[in-house]
Length: 334
Image (cartoon, rainbow, N blue to C red; front, side, top):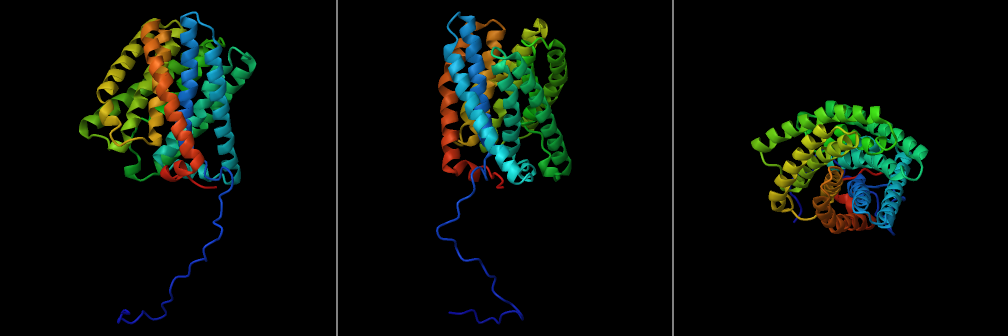
């Protein structure tokens, strides 16, 4: 039956464009999801940890260098893809910053450049130093954009999350290449700059966890707390600041134990792109253990990471190639 009520005066039904056939295909990289970068960051970190592990046991370096070559190639491909997306419409950066996966992904993308600098140190110190400074500058610009977003966001959007470690303490990754390049002042400054920031985020996050439990889908992000402690221990050890290194190593151990006991609750919602947050802290922990000369324990963590991290990377890459990752993480489209 038709609706007996009269239509409002002047009402006209809304018109819709006719469906396209065949359906319009989005342009290449138009919806490149930043959420792919955390897993790739984990793969880069895994290669660096494997490099340290093979050196510690006096084994040939070729397996680590092969893995690092694959990791750098994948990161570069993703970085070029996102650069193409920005080139088509620069406003996508601000739109991706509005979502938590987008903010985490963009931070991991720029921090990946700092890991690439560490990869390049044994091959070409000049290139490594150039990539290091470019990565620090790029990440600095991103940090400023995040601060602007935070100030403009509504109250509910200003919550401190573990992703803040990536935005503001992630600069410590630059120390991985600064130390072997002889840039000791830079590396020392990064330790003293990012250390207090990481401590502040840990304390704030601890208060948040005590007051309320994070939603199940966001719990994998808690693993990010492990990354700055491990990296600060690694860089401090490289600088010979052993008391600082041991202190952050103890913090990393405590966080790792807490994450281990809570692992079942962190993965209860099933696999998602946020599992990338498990990868780079795990690799950073293995690298820190080798830096602290705890080689056997480091080898055990590394062995687990060699199976787990590639598993996450493959699943994230498959989701990206099939187009589902962009939709599930609300990636902006250029």
